[in-house]
Each structure stands twice: as structure tokens, then as C-alpha cells.
Image (cartoon, rainbow, N blue to C red; front, side):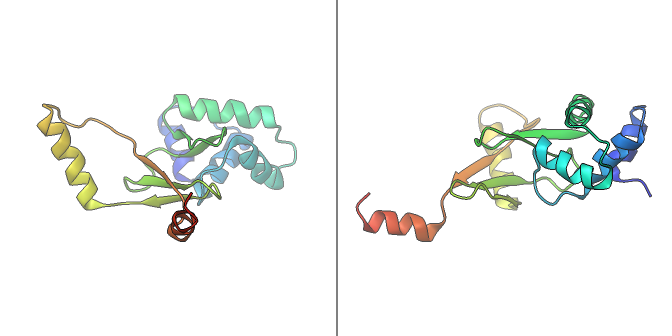
Length: 146
């Protein structure tokens, strides 16, 4: 059975080698936003012959074909997820742990379109990333006068 990424590759006419299929499967099955090294480690458990260079080339190919989307969450690593694979969502990044939390919010979607319209635009695309620290940690910092 093909993954969504494999199907997108086939639809775009990309040649699918067995190693590309494995990388596509790893990316499709990811519940996080893995960087290239994480994809490599996961793929290597399925096929130890996969090299990190192959993973880099394949991810770059998938990105250029708009099959995967690259994110920079401020930690110095490019992270990847399937383009358009999940519902439209945004990201909240925990600055302490690096955890990336995906969220959807209908009110926010309406507000973005309203802001664009007020400025004389129709929204054609956007990306929203929020960065924060857990509330308990922020409250503790305030209590200490920092």
C-alpha cells in the first residue's frame, strides 16, 4: 500500500526507488516534525544501506516538488512535514523543550481573513508559528521578579 507521499511522487512523475519509498514512508508516518538526521535514523532501521546523503537529496527533491514542507522553528534545524497532508494547522513551539504542538483554531482563521480584507487583500497563503514557555514556568519567573 502506498503512502500519501508516495502517491504524490507518482502523481508528479518522480521516479520511486526503494530507498525513496522508505524515506517517503518515514515522512508520511511521522507524528512529529523530524529533521534530516531523524529521518535518516528511522529510514536506516528499515534499510541499513540508506545513506544520509540519499536522505538529504530525497528530502530536497520532495521539497522542490512541494511534497514536503520545510519549517525552521528557531532551533537551527530544518524540520519537515508532508505538504497539505493534514488539515490546515499552525505550530506552537515550546522554547524550553523544543516540542512542536500543532493546533487549529476557527476563530483565528476568520481573524486572518478579516485582517487581510481590512488591508485590501485576499489571503493567498500564510504560516503562523507561536513560540512560548509553559504558563507555570512563566508565572514562576514573574514571581521571582525576573
